[in-house]
Image (tube, rainbow, N blue to C red; front, side):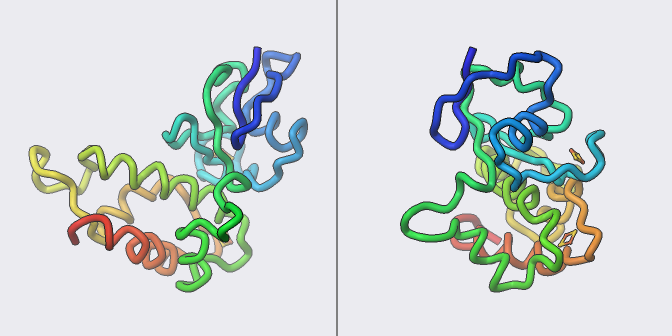
Length: 168
Ligand code: FES
Ligand code: FES
């Protein structure tokens, strides 16, 4: 049994009860994904599985065997930071930074959901393509909490990054 983490094939944990979050942090030493609540309430542990955002604290590592997991450590490349990482810096999208890896992974997954036209609770027209408004971003990112209160900067960073790709 194996899975792909940030492009590298790794063996699944021997103990099938190991959460994906504990596996990433304790066995692979990828400590960017954070353990906030460990019960699905804060979003700090958000990673991408085949491009979709998941809460790694509520996911068993063995559930994602054969699939591609991307953590915050897998976003930057030789050319530099991921555009969202750079935007979080530019727009003051963090203070302590504890929620930031989850915020950025969640935003990438959220952008893909927007691109697929998936509506949210605040989408006025369920039959129309979702648009990139602050209200949509706030709603779609509401599962990622920031105890520092950096939400305005987080929304600004996400909006600025995605604005060029989607109609406002
Ligand atoms: Fe997973 Fe809080 S640590 S949602
Ligand atoms: Fe501190 Fe979000 S930046 S919790």
